[in-house]
Image (tube, rainbow, N blue to C red; front, side):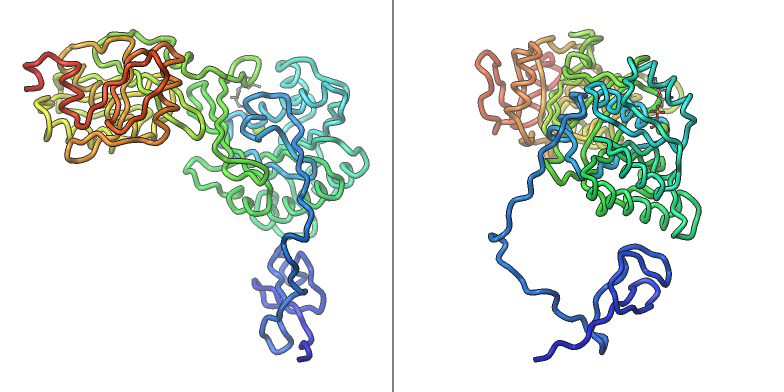
Length: 447
Ligand code: TYD
Ligand code: MG
């Protein structure tokens, strides 16, 4: 059967053309033009071929020289790829990108830093604070993406840092820099330049406080990798996660501390979180949590006091819903009475706790505070609590046990299903909250 003559139509404005284009000539949108048949029905594209007949794409990452960053990138950046570094303003994106730029340039490789938000002098003084500034680190303050692409063609850097996507624009598209149409077009242009010249682009994108990645979220499918810098800006701890990664897993987590010399990697996170712990103090419990592929031991703290005005509940770095659940289970299934007292719970060190495996630790911390009974310093606790008071298994139990043992803990109160961990770590398997508490509290407190 003869194929009908094809044409192309923009899904956004509906204008048609004979030739396919990446950008619609009618409305200026990118990636909206699709193939349709002359009579308006889609037609089959080129013949399908066996997948096995294709070569495997070589994607060898080249390290950026910052361990915690390279770990999240599964080795580094792949030539020809675009990595989006997203995060709230002020979280440390420029700092991290500039540190990476300096590291790569220190080997003599050309690195181009496109500074759309700061003058070269400002970038230079920040770079000097971070360490020596290699001569092969070039800076340009152009915000026209086409001029940037031309400069990339001319200077052939190994890495291009774009700070930020929101500062770029192209004359081919309506709207001011930062508008959605501009962000799409500029990112598309950077993707093209990266592929053409086999350079790695590290592009910074600001996200809004409410978590909705206004801007970067819509770019996720255009770029190869999306990294997110997270943390509480009032604290110094920063987490780096891969939200999307075409060249590796997204489960690695990088940890940094914002210091006067920039972002400093924290390879031994548990040691940092436990450093200030008053082991054995009532209300303090060590809990191994998992975050991606990483396990960390954190200190959970609870304080139960007589209310000064009305009873209050206050949480820091954990979800108030978890505290509500744990106190409800404590009240319904154990003799530990909270009554009208005020509750405070927090995770020391600024780690945001999302792991349900910390439930049992939270319950033990509350009971420990109410009874003024400290938990022995060499004990860790983990397990999820169910509404019937049962202690449920959690993901990656053995990984938690190993991290706890490495940090010096020798006894673990764990769900009944937990497999053996390292030799030398005694496991106390419990299947309900009451049993766990009897292990810590005086007999009359849990009767
Ligand atoms: P910055 O990298 O500019 O954030 P972003 O690019 O994400 O907007 O860093 C913001 C904060 O980090 C700023 O308030 C100052 C602080 N900072 C340090 O504490 N130490 C440093 O060495 C640098 C460069 C910045
Ligand atoms: Mg910045």
